Image (cartoon, rainbow, N blue to C red; front, top):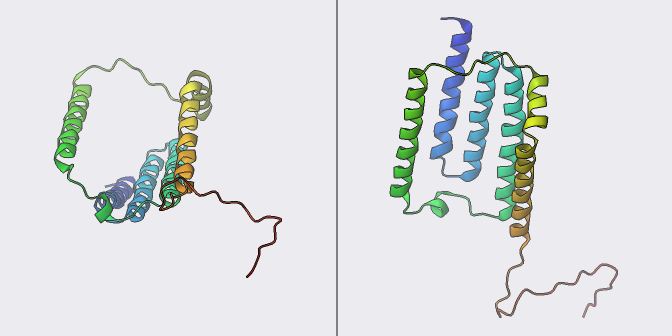
Length: 185
């Protein structure tokens, strides 16, 4: 067994433990931190196969941006955190959907190896990937960035929404006290 294979087994074990902890955690914040471990091990696997650009993209975008976005949305929306708030009775339909998705993926995976390859991959460079993203795929790239911005703005709006007063007549109007003197007495 080579040193690269030993490193792969260690990284795969850490990633598997992180993934198991991700789906079994009772706390959403702990699950998000387990997601960091899982995604970081994917980046380490890319480093093992000498795909440095993909490894750093994985770390910067998924570990750095997506997980931070998830944690910010949890904090800003003041969502209840814990297993009790997330427990529902939809496990049966969710299991059926999961089994269907798994069956489709297994079918696609098995079918891929029985057919002859029609695409001949050529070595790509970082410059070729950049040109592809910013020339051929500029619209999907921009749409995803606008979607992420809308999600973040939506989280802020939900978090900042004023609670209705008990009278039910609408939100209270709050006037800032900047430049005014507050009366005491």
